[in-house]
Length: 415
Image (tube, rainbow, N blue to C red; front, side):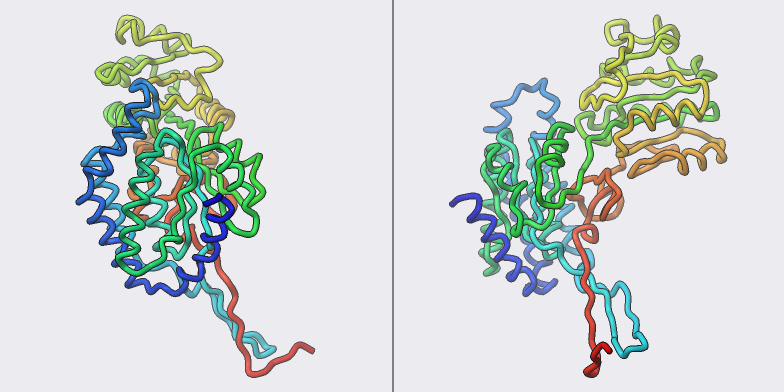
């Protein structure tokens, strides 16, 4: 089947989706979650084929890797999505106007949602569950690195759909080649919205090459600012968690900004990072205070590439700032507008940070690792939008809807 034929089938399948009851959709997702766990061996076998082709030192390796625990976590997210209220048919506004019109604004599915992503097989299940629950058809374009994993995932999804007498055309998996991506970006009239998930290069390529609407999801260049009023004990926990929990994901900490008055606390603030062998690229002031207190083999002098880089690995930059304004200016210059945090006890400083920092998620005394749809109570996410049109931050069910106006009258005509 050609890619164009798949796009046509996806567009036609929107007619199937609008006829499905929420009860049936919920049943499918709950059964699929159970099927995933029951057939973990099939998924892991396919995933191992993909892992064998990738160097373990590659930052994408951790994202590609599935384990029984990760499959169970994906399934649990799917169950959460299944049990959430349907976002479709929600009455957003209603009014009657003097002309006699009775007007309602009602939420509806986007239609066909395309997603281009890299070595992230969990995205296959997440995208399907969120699209299916919100009444959308999903067109998936995964990368070559996860091809076997994605095929196994879609096989299980389609077999579950068939068991419920639902057309498997509601989910399409495109080939992993670049031509499929190019055709998807140009699928005018078939695909209603396109979401790229992956590196800055992938996102830029889709943004620049697509002829259909795109929602940018983010490369995360993430900062945490430790203010003059910051609590050291809180800071130690937050910096360690944000950097080391899962360094290969987009909400991981990339750059620690430190108020100059707290340089004496820097060795203690980052000491635990050495246990995880985090390489620190420190500016001159920070470097002086860390020498002799942090393993020399893990300590490097920062250069011009240290800032504004999404490391996706156990590597972190440190920048010393003279005051709050310099910290915010640095964030403004290098941020990808994904997630930014401040560690501070001075509430006036915190409120300024919330007001002046432009990002999808802004934190105080909290790890940026929480930028995640499931953690935000959204069940799962289809991506983290770093733009401001239509959706921003973790995109869940409501972000996969649009709306239409329903207008009724008793035979009114316009004069």
